[in-house]
Image (tube, rainbow, N blue to C red; front, side, top):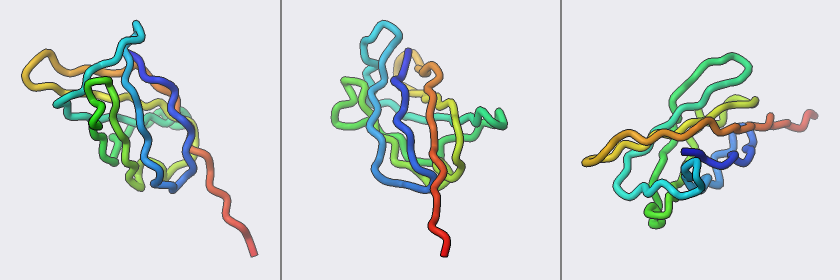
Length: 114
């Protein structure tokens, strides 16, 4: 399974939420109806991994693989380059589903100095 490259975000920005379509390696979608989603963020600079703190929610279009990532402050607190992976747990049925690595960049927020 693959997920498209994730668009960059700005450090500290919680909006807008990110809509993501989960695609398998053959280009078909992973139906997410009824799935419970979790994920991890790995820093390429430090090689440390943390759980996604925000909410991952299948949308009304979950049958077509769509879900929404509502960021928590911890998800976008650090600027840098990251690898993100998502997991989907299903009950009943084979579980879990997992994505391949998706690259993600969080740009540093620059404040004006007086």
